[in-house]
Length: 144
Image (tube, rainbow, N blue to C red; front, side, top):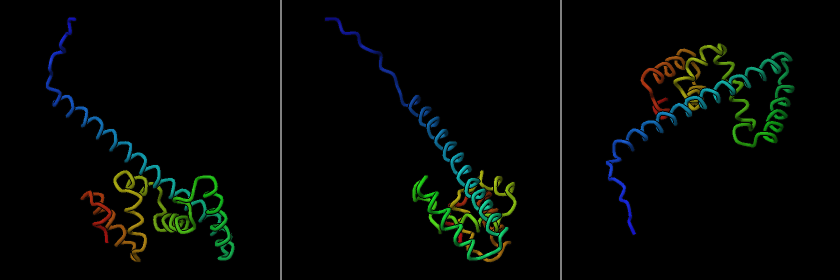
């Protein structure tokens, strides 16, 4: 029986190239998904704010948020659509009313970055930390 031997290649260079291709694609997918998540959350918050603030009744707002949360959870699952998350989206849209600024920042920052600065009381402080996080590529843990 004649067994042909396959030539031995040094695959280290090939593996390194493939590793780079995979990591680059994963990074792109993660950035794209994060951008879409952040913008989705902004749009949800903005749309609910328009509905609730248009009627300007606190009781009505609470009912709407609870009802929206229930219905979204039924269709899309509990993660990310509970009342607390919906209220966070609303607050996000109120604190960052310009969708273009949100779109620009969310290409560099994750939804978690925005969530971390929402509790800050000062608009300038929020802007400062987000700008710094974007320019210095800070992780969420570096934010106050």
